[in-house]
Length: 301
Image 1 (cartoon, helix red, strand yellow):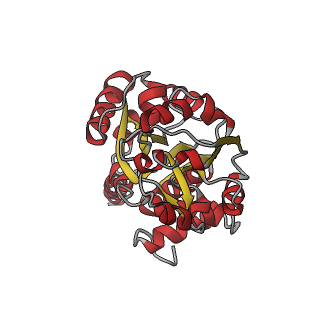
Image 2 (tube, helix red, strand yellow):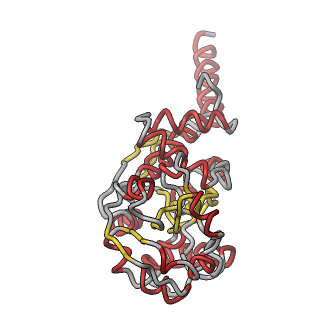
């Protein structure tokens, strides 16, 4: 009788272990990389928090990889990182070395196909914002001159002073090409440090300047972004690029990533950048508050 009880007990333990194994969740650790810029830090925090709250996967987040795409993309291929936020224009021009960027939907379709075929990487959704160049003016001056588009700017540019950082004047797709496209002939051009240009335009030292469409200071500045009516500037929509091997190991990740698809507008990203850069909030706090605002996290999580 004693031996029989031991056998049944052993069988019970084996069954319990088998059932427990079937019921256990997919645990493990993944790594996220970001480029060295504020909005990438915030995006990395959003991805980390969503993953850790909604799955049993732990996340190691490495912020501010020097060289950005030039170092992160090869590291992803080697398996040093599992995923990172990338921009469509950067992927097309820098990674794939392609020329003219297709229309938005065609661009993403081609990126998905080529990245899967050549790199075994997958694009999973786009966050919604487009961080590209724009020309901005003081709102009151734009209204006074009747300027809402870059084509309209061409007719009055001879009366205005233009400013940008040094690299914009040197880019093949920068100042000279922009002027040729829109017939711009500014009265004067100035080389202005990126950290000083908002103060320069507010003071009247500049009339027109380059901005990025998600600059934090756009959130509070009385500036007007002029419509790029001939689509001169490339599109830089941001989305998650992830190793296909990682998605096969952790299939629960893809639905998490897709919750960020179309979630963040240009105005949203500008505000989030402002909160970190000017209000000195932490990236973790800003990311968490936004995800709560959008209903993706509970306030007590």
